[in-house]
Length: 344
Image (cartoon, helix red, strand yellow):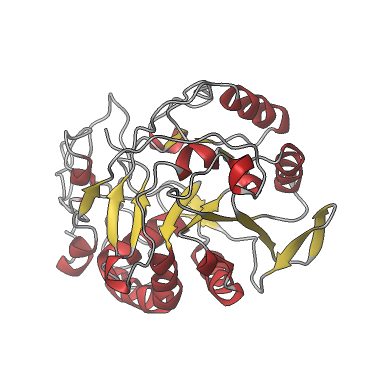
């Protein structure tokens, strides 16, 4: 970040070796100590690796910045059998048993874009967020998505810039406003878990719901969220318990000030990295590894590879092409059930 002269590497390919590159003003991802380690938490280690044949030794990051990316504590999530769902809100049609957790889901969409088409298609199939127990579609304008499904307006600008080492959307402020609105609307309070789902994510809530640990009557001291990738939380699907949602929304401003101070300005992070560090580092919310939850190119899946036949995954990302999204959804929905690989 500003004043550090160090770029942070989020992920290495199998044939790559890490090295430091001096680039003022760019902070993105995580510092690495080598190629993929045996334990995923090592990707959070704030270790600087010397460059090969450096012409000039770059300045080390200040200790405050190194400390912000120390490994976050994680716990294993016990596996439970999954259930079938038809997309209806009733327990019977969803295939729920009384012991299974309820799920509130929401998506943030850019109104005049392919994201609207993707969500309309999911609504017509009663798939994705529309097969959760309750759902909300947010945008920065009020509108009708389809039939009687309303788009809830949030006072924020969705046309954010890109930046950082990996040219990611700098959408922290936009999602800060959305999480605040989720809490103000209060629908999440009726459910055990909340899932934030990107419109281009193929999501099967029925696979997730039966594998979630029971959180009913939880107190503030045992709020949890799921880490869906060995490289850290990926924003395509974020799953939080009820009190974790409250903690994130109420602590967003505190985290923003905390990281701006450590980074010497804007950290050039996307919402997922910010939320992960905010919840785990500042707010001390319990972080549970659910590494089999998501199949995504940002988490090591080959770009363009079709993993939709894998019955042990609850989500696949990204699928921004409408036909590809529909095809993936139908292939995934046609597979026999399998236990979710929540820890591997």
